[in-house]
Length: 213
Image 1 (tube, rainbow, N blue to C red):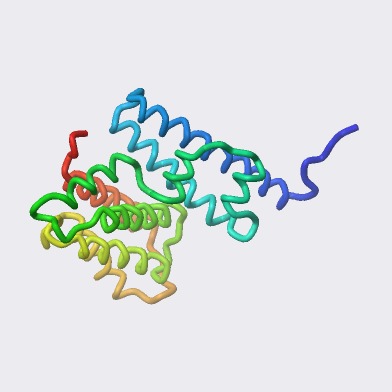
Image 2: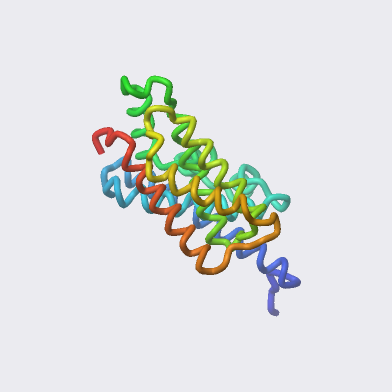
């Protein structure tokens, strides 16, 4: 006798999303443990961790209303404390936290907190994810870029006024300001914005102290 796991397409997609969420949490736990044991380089860890965090944020948003992550973890008896800390509490890789802590203690950045740097990282990730998910209407893109610009401005002396990331984001805000709320970026514009955000994010991470990494 055939056992059906779902009754319709919607239930099938929900179960597939559950499977993806399970895999992301387990993968993050393994990655965190590998990093602590020095089994993966800081650069490889950070790249993979950022990808997992991005995937987790997108998936958890789509599952909102269906299940909460704590309930999911409890239901499937997941013992992944490091993953839950990284995905739910921190939201950024451990390498970024270390650089943020170093920046916070630097003489030239006494007003800069690790939380502010972590928040800036999250705004970049959210904006880049939105573009990749084809959220290209002006009223979708502009608020996210404004969040990025605001979070960079709050970092004070860590990022000078002519910082590459600030310049590029402000240029895009200027372009979007001239568009209507429902106007959408073209495919070419979206590709350029994604490239500019990625470049700005890389420059932002490079501007943070190495923190011995």
